[in-house]
Image (cartoon, rainbow, N blue to C red; front, side):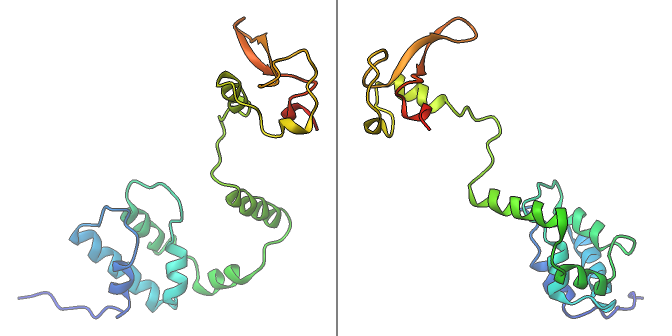
Length: 174
């Protein structure tokens, strides 16, 4: 005898099909579980658009997107739909607003490069014998290389490296 078929919410299957599984689609058993969990959430009062926003992984690096979705859709993890909707509508205040503003600003300036050498490009320019940007704004001091506006100075290891002249290199003039 075949098991009785359970009627699931009609939007559950398309919602699960549209989720971003990051190139690792779920197996048939996990897919059925996700469809059942999504159907339960939709039956509990969630709107498809809000559920998509709640399940959005953003830029998070995850090993199994399907497992994350199953965890978020679990009855003990899924927030009340009205509470979620209200929180999504409410403007940020205080520190949350400040942090959000800084994160937005950081996103506009390109990817974060925490270990980038800020003076490395000046050293590479000098090694190539190139003039630094803005060199024409400052008169040559006569004590450094006129083209690169650098002087050879020992670094922490004692090796001589080009160093921007404090008197006439444009990067050192404010």
